[in-house]
Image (tube, rainbow, N blue to C red):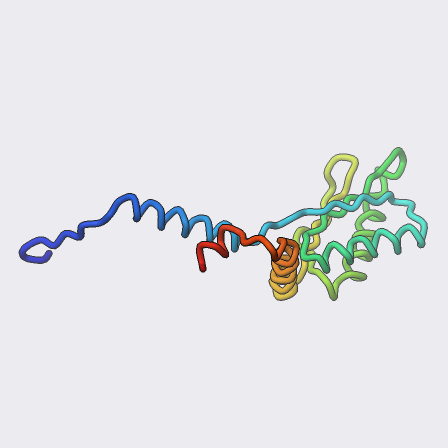
Length: 150
């Protein structure tokens, strides 16, 4: 401990303002995880499967997680291994875009699996999304942040 004790005098209002600005900046920079859902039936036509797979690929390219649900009805419930194979096939088809975050598990009448985009791809997609939002703001009017920087 210092002799004599040292104390720093601060402007408390300025301190509160700066800490609020730091918190606001941190909130702006954090990535928002969005979970999209794709629902499949056990007996799905090949063309319908390709369409659903295309939607899953689009979601993963956009940097979003995808929750894939296989719905079982009637006698289909006695064959959960077929739903498991369908989910594994879909995971293998989109493996270059994403990774299985939670393996298929039975949840009542449904079997659920979550696929997340690859980490490095998610970072670039988040940057692309923020750049798109900056372009969307009208260039003729200055936002509060631009006015504060000027």
